[in-house]
Structures are given as C-alpha cells and as structure tokens.
Length: 154
Image (cartoon, rainbow, N blue to C red; front, side, top):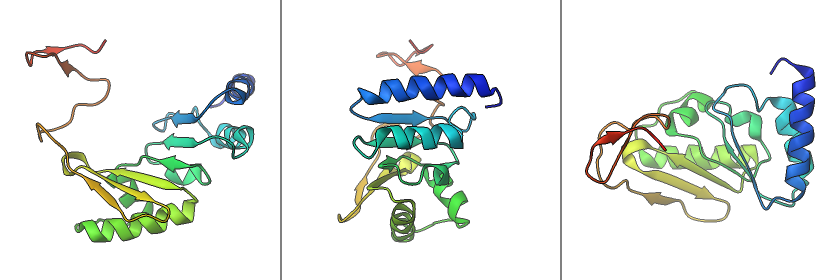
C-alpha cells in the first residue's frame, strides 16, 4: 500500500476495532493492503490476548506469530520449495512450518483431497471433501442454487 496517510488511517481503525474484538482475521490474498506495517500493528494491538488468523495467499511467512493460518497446499509447497505427493510428507513439513512460524494451528486446504489440520501438541486431523470433486470455482465466481442452476453470488 503506497499512500502513507491511508496506511495510517487503516492502522488506527484496526487498532480501535481490535480493542473490542474476540478475534482478528486478515484475509489479504496478496493485494498488498495487509503489508508488513499493518500485520505488525495488528499483532501489537492484539497483545496476545485474542486469536489472530491469517488467510494470506502466498505470503504466509509474513504472518509469523499469529495464532493460525489457512494456506492451501500450493502455498505450503511454494514457501518450502518442495512438492508433496504423499500425505505423510505434507504433514511432517506442515508441522515443521507451523512450529517455525509460531502458529498454534495450521489448516492446509487440499482442494478435492480435503484438509489437514495440524495443531500444537495434537495428532494431525484429516478431512475428506464431500460432494462434487470437480474444479472449484473462485470465491468471486458463480454459485449454484438448490436446483443446480448457476446464479451470481449474493
């Protein structure tokens, strides 16, 4: 985010909102709004008193010290510089990454293969996806109504 005045306003607003919050979720998707200054300011304002959750889209390393994050498998592979073909490899690497970044939990989404939840002091938990295993539409894409017809998001 290039405008210092806008960044300052955003930091001030976030700080005020955090003071009364039960948790903070930053979902930036690499658009640059949650830059290093905003992340640090958010971490400082929370003072370890409330959970901080990150959905960062290929910037997971910027959110070290948060409570939890929800990267997809591609993001984990990109950050670690390795492709994982076996679930056990992903679990081991994900656990090491969770510890390195200081997260209490890491939820790795794996598309049609479900999700892997890695929590401090707990055995990994795997979920399987249900329903249609075809391509997943982007969040801003079309949704299906109860009859299966495409419609724009609400």
